Image 1 (cartoon, one colour):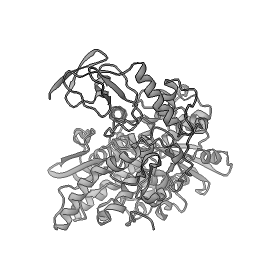
Image 2 (cartoon, rainbow, N blue to C red; image 1 turned 90 degrees about the vertical axis):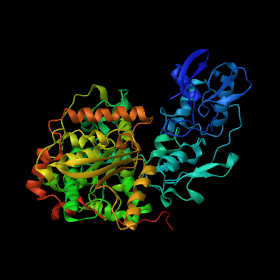
Image 3 (cartoon, helix red, strand yellow; image 1 turned 45 degrees about the vertical axis):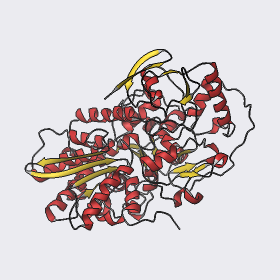
Image 4 (cartoon, rainbow, N blue to C red; image 1 turned 180 degrees about the vertical axis):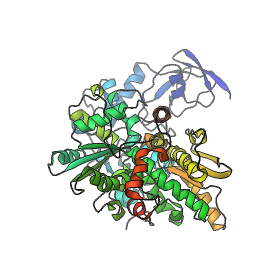
Length: 582
């Protein structure tokens, strides 16, 4: 590691060679405004807001995309730079609608924040708006070309971070737009609905399909009982919407808030995460001991499932037949819970609060999502939608008294909680699979090898003399590496060196899903993950198979894991999907 010495506004700072001027300035405690830049992406300086002056030279450089060198000295702010940046913003605003009050990003818009920061109060340039209509074809995401500022973040995310290539740059100059190839509708493209484009968009050009009005209508309908489940990562995501530090666990306040906004009952998807582990753990052990198709690929993430159906249909027999925890929960809600609560399942309006935009699509994906005889999950709201719902319902979230989830499908183990972080499904599965194989409990349930933000994590878990080789992948562009390895092994008549692989579409896993609060970077991902691991550590039960409510569910209702009833309600099948719809 070589160190270079630079000056930022006369402030000496030492940074690693190759550090950008932008990050060197951060190290010096100096903020340079940006709009196209994002920590997750390779900077390419499209917006020009981060320009700085190089002392001793007439050269103007873009701080985000310029590496430092020894003895570099830059000026980041002076009257001329201020005016240039203000003019850049005014030019961007001349092609951007001024409908901030009705925009879904009002109050959470990076362009709006910068316009306020630079004191822009009038429009000196001719207004030239893009009149292209919204694309509402997707069940999960809305594209609004009229608000696009051509920063390119969505294209970079879709192509480089996710490897999906549903969005691209089309046209040149003023005519450039970000859209699916051949200007197709989003639903006809290779889009996997992950929502990372929306999570990284700085304005309101891409956003989740807001369905909070459907929730309000259901609550107001006297013929419906609104029953809500909350995903593992919601408990550390929603806190940021109310000014709390990232990673703050607010589980019982969320239960209380949902009751305040009209929910009849509130359950926890952690319960069905435990249920997923029982089913998936037994499926894994069955494949290992009975010569089934290996490696087993997890099936919790709907964007990953959409991806494998489109890009690797020859590997579908490797994918677990287990439904996601959300869908398992919906099926149990309208069968077991309805029976225990004395409710007609036709009256139950099942709502899931998820960190993921793809869950909106998943709930309606096919007939398997109606295993209860009804649509198992009627409505999906993202974390962001829940935050808005709580606020516009007049609920003071921070002052709420904590309450418990409703029985009998609210109890959960720590293993269910860590589903929200990359590696969490693997760790939870290992804790239970070890018990299924050996009949013993692990001496130490933390599996450090599968934690952290390395894109691909590999290791071997010793099941009391039986080695089980595992891998964890997050970010679909990295899934390709492991999937190609499996495909090549199959072609050669051998098997890839794994028994079990967890794949999540979004970097960091669900804690940074496409429906979580804006601004996720690796610092926030780590803080959110740490909140989940802390919650796991203080849990009464650390393993899914120890959850008393799960044990009782099998005793009273499901029978044996992977049994006939469990398969009907909790399992599904997959088929090849075309990359582009005809």
